[in-house]
Image (tube, rainbow, N blue to C red; front, side, top):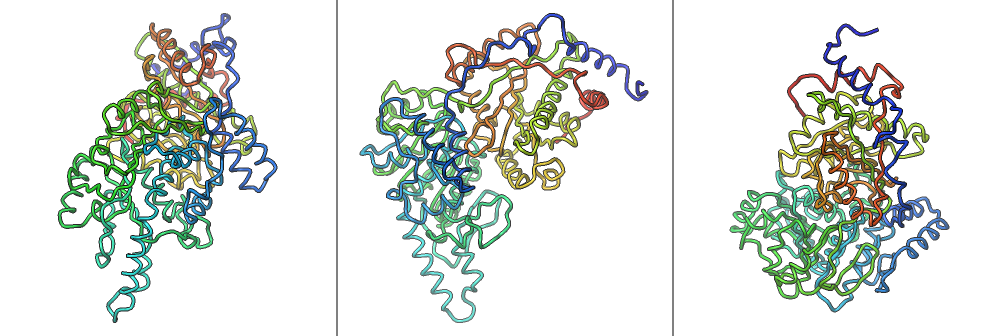
Length: 611
């Protein structure tokens, strides 16, 4: 029976949807009966293997760990160059840092992490870390940075400890034990947080280590990771348990390390003003993480005289002008998954000396001018496309949204068919063309998928918003990941963001990525690699699926041709067989017909979009 409340226009759209999705006697190009081609056997996926290796060690299954480690060793080192062994090099790390990375759960390094440390033994000063998305590059350069500045951290910690001891011994009115512990704890100084430190302690001096990242979200991720490496409490649940392995109470490294972050030009200018009076992050931090805009605004107030190392993350998208003023002995590290000619440009400009190159397999070799790092995704990712049904009128946008909602719901259905709790529950990132589309799509999906997936929209209106949302979701998704638990904790299981926010987005445990009507061209392989690389990452269960939803306009075959060319690049495929076609589940396939009507109501309702 037809509900009287459903407008005639929606019923017409529903009829069009049912007809468009109904099985046809002739196979359509996007029918599951005719895939484009059978996918290639994926080459060895190092990210997935390292994830399995750490999980085996965590459950103390050392026989399985040995087998997996042998698989990894057999799957890399094809060029004959030196390959770093997959162990944390105790001779290269201070004992306290070695204990810390293991306590944080990084039992074995990934190949690029092992290679980053092995490169220090080279006579070549500068280093390039070129590895696929999700391979652990952030930890690789972060550990390398902490190793390079460890001596300075320990020297400054000794001064801070002596100052605290003197204050504790003073007459009443000195430092209380609680204040002393706060003063000696590591500090993470993020913009907008009032954490200026104890004015009674001497300023630590200018930074010894610098990270430059192209976006606020990437800078925040790097700052949080560095903070955890120097003893900061990193657990997502934010519960303080002195017995936890990652607890400050177990940390045996230098005390009172300060990690500061600057995201915007305004914050850089404010830090420069504070530096004039000997205060602020430019005069009172060991490790500084900043965007190029913040570095430029800080200007000459950014004292680099004490700097031992500078790392430029996503160097192909990041202005590395800060490297121009480094002390001659300081190391430069360029990092990225899609570096292309960025390294050659940096060498030609004199910002870096001809470097040593570390690739995703952990091979360490001297860089050559023809080392143009391609855009690469983790090998185990499955690449798919879907063409939304064509309506020929104003209903096309609604059909696209309905197609996306059905695909997301079908992911949950397939998960349940596979056994539910025995597999990772689907968690997705949806990339849209721009911020306005993200708000529109997110609002529609939130209504359609309510009760099944917790949808969050982050359109990037404020610097750092996407990174903050991802971190909040990490905390909110700790433990149970069912809908009720995630919503109760303020987290999300589907994040809708503009494509511009794709590079480095750290949304946890992503199983599915959707590229929603992005219109990518053949020259967009780098961007696609970063979007797709939100899944298939080290530490994530499951290999990941990336689906591009194309608009069924007359030019969709051209869009498909461009997508095929892109996937051939990022999947190291010369045959075009790595892209699989999938169909939108039909209305008849939905186990709850009423849910199909609910979708029509939710996705076609006229309203003002809101977050």
